[in-house]
Image (cartoon, rainbow, N blue to C red; front, side, top):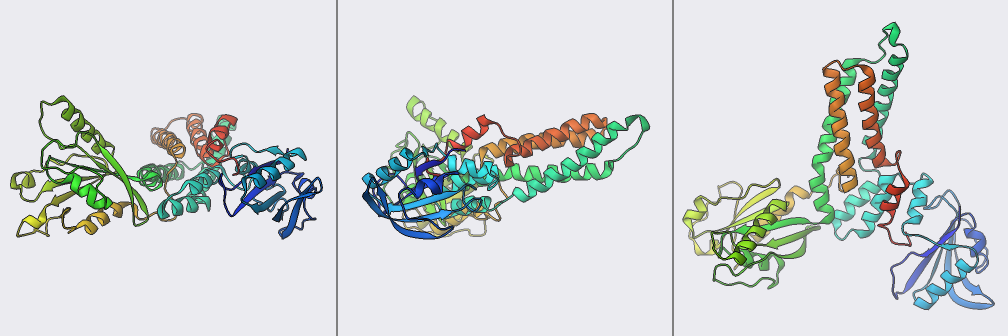
Length: 435
């Protein structure tokens, strides 16, 4: 396998930069320019090429298999000058290394068994994480997350498939090796676990990419004022003229370590104005796609307060009763209602807490946040349901075994037991070159 090299620190000028070299010739190539290297020791050494010192560097050698990639690896820390970075990289390539492709270091870690495929994908998520919650989720999945559960599920399915297929070899002797009741119980347990993981994707994806919160309601209830208050910025135009907001306005803020994507929408009402109607249609679309809908009503509008007509969505819906500073009595006993004042700030902390509460428990990483895993888990769930139905209906063992193998296949696509070059190419193309 060829020796690859790349700059692993972000592009641009900084205090230091790191050039990574990995492959069977990594140590030999590096020692053409630096002092002799010792395993897992950092060496302060000049990087000398053609008799000239390029830079004073700190070089660390990791002997295979005890490195990130599983191959011999050398990391050269130099000053962050763009000239120095490129000069060192060019000398390494001239000495026999080649420029690494996007994600190739992590791809080699996967191929060498240092990481399974889902852990390798978690590396990219960890690099791209922007909040505490997304960082913790990616880190947990890098450490194994729900992989142990998948490993156990896969092994049990393999064992039981083997028993079913053994029955087929003795089919003429009417021998039954697999306990049908045990297999049915197992399929039900796996189905329940797969369903839980499928359902966890909504939370995991929101933690990873940001929680979409649509602020919805009739005109002039204070939606834009609420957006500005939550962002602590005059992001949206505020007016007492109905229909001021004609399009969705989106901005982000971090609350309790979670990225929140607030979306201010056009006021929902009957109108003959085609432009305003287009804005209202977008409002309804935003509500349907949101993880959380904050439906705002005017505390002084008794009719709307008693019949708010809150949109039904799959996510969380919060009824925010705005302008509570204009009324004398607040009915705090009403469940799922939060009295707020976008003007004075009353109730905003309670509203923020209600928004993030369903997404706060990242737990041990036993949730899906990767779309590829989500699609594979849905296929696994369908296959396991076929297994259960087949067992309940007395389907012949050879047909049940086909569905079991299908379930095993979909587990394998998540962890990497089943891969194709096309899948690997798509996954690792998301990485930066130095990782």
